[in-house]
Image (cartoon, rainbow, N blue to C red; front, side, top):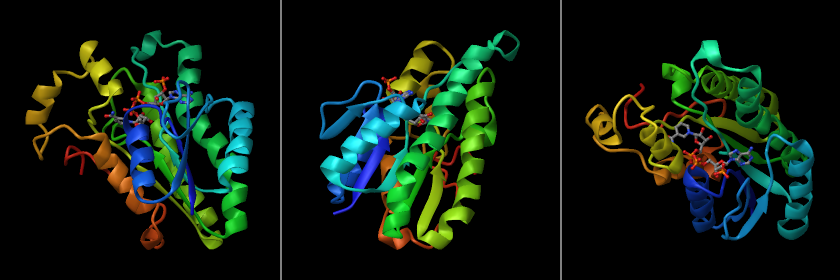
Length: 234
Ligand code: NAP
């Protein structure tokens, strides 16, 4: 049985991905700042390599080598660029981009050894559209898309695929926090009217795309950015 690691698996999209991969028959471990009470869940900050490595040691001991990695941990930030401190910039880059670096490097030896692996990075549709007051977040998520493309070329010969799923407008605690703080440029309901499929996205929509990209049959798909956004970005 394959073992998957889902970061940010304590909430929202990451939680739905963990549940879906489990339903598909994988053993799933999750890492989060606030781990959930589901399955094998460990507390770790993805921007801290020592914490990631420590969690990986435990996961390998309990569940075996990890050959599926979904990087879903992320944090948003809103600040006018002129007022953005370097510390706030750095933290958003640390979690959203450097967290992917740490988790991929930590897991990679297992995939290389197996000659098989699936990496899916959750970026953001804002990397396509831009988003005011989120320069740090958009920069980090755009870099995740770039990392995905470059890494796919590097790891393809070793049987490892690397793809990104940029969600757009998915109903999670992150989206609702933004709505509450009036940072969405309208309510969720108003946005639904501007969304071609006329609904808000569900975490399960992202989980379905990840499950496909993590599957055996997606082996000829790598280096791709698969938008799941109800047609808001094409
Ligand atoms: P969410 O409900 O806030 O989930 C994000 C999860 O990541 C939370 O459990 C959070 O833990 C965890 N996390 C944050 N920083 C972490 C760190 N340093 N180390 C480990 N875990 C950390 O948000 P979501 O909407 O599901 O977001 C999931 C991913 O989708 C993120 O990468 C986000 O950027 C991306 N995304 C979401 C949308 C959307 O419409 N919802 C759109 C574009 C991209 P805590 O709750 O403890 O902080």
